[in-house]
Length: 307
Ligand SMILES: [Zn+2]
Image 1 (spheres, rainbow, N blue to C red):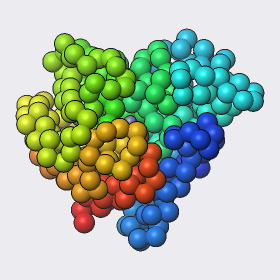
Image 2: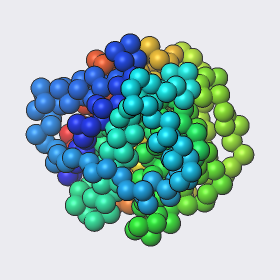
Image 3: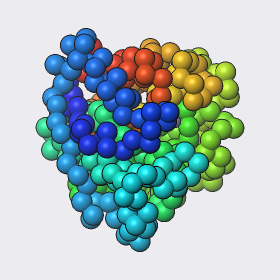
Image 4: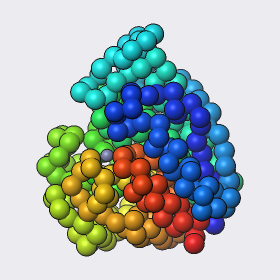
């Protein structure tokens, strides 16, 4: 397997303060561990490019982006939602995070790589079409899916989200869009408190309850995701890869282990091999406890590489 690793130093420009769990140390911890173990040497490393307006406006309307830009302060923060703070360079970071997702799609669609991990922040899956929330401004996974559809003519893209939080933004953007299948496992009831009742055939909501762990997670993925995926036959798989369902992560109350991330990645790769030439693009979402985050991402990437 050829695996790309895409990131950008400007992801660190979005900094809501050292007290905030969604901080630049998250990427440093991931990159440090990959270098320490030598796994980084197995990856093709690339720098993201900023997203273009055209690519961004396909998902988030121009007026919404304009209002975000006008809200960006020259210093300090503009709070958009409880703990979602817009700082002076937050949108520069969001631009390269979304740009990484675009570059990842370009690489797999041009057969330059088999799969990609985008080590980016701010995350994206809570960002709805016209609302920023849950530490998210631009919906990176949605932008990637629409790019694959509009630029490369794909008709079926699957987005698979194993973050502890439901990907409400992705659901908001694609509800009732037959071109995109969205499967999400998440703790329920829990943030983001919306779209829990799915009325759309292309949205596969798989709630778990506080305290659930490997066994319940694996059973749901095998029963619900696999069935939906094999009948949808995706031409590309995008993972909204959040690692905050880990037992050691204080953000949620699920109890996944490092090996669950290896397991789910292998399962997605099997689906990708069956339906889409192994093409899989994984984009970082949550994960806030630095040790379990970096270990779990490491396991995820080991599976992507085929180790
Ligand atoms: Zn999360």
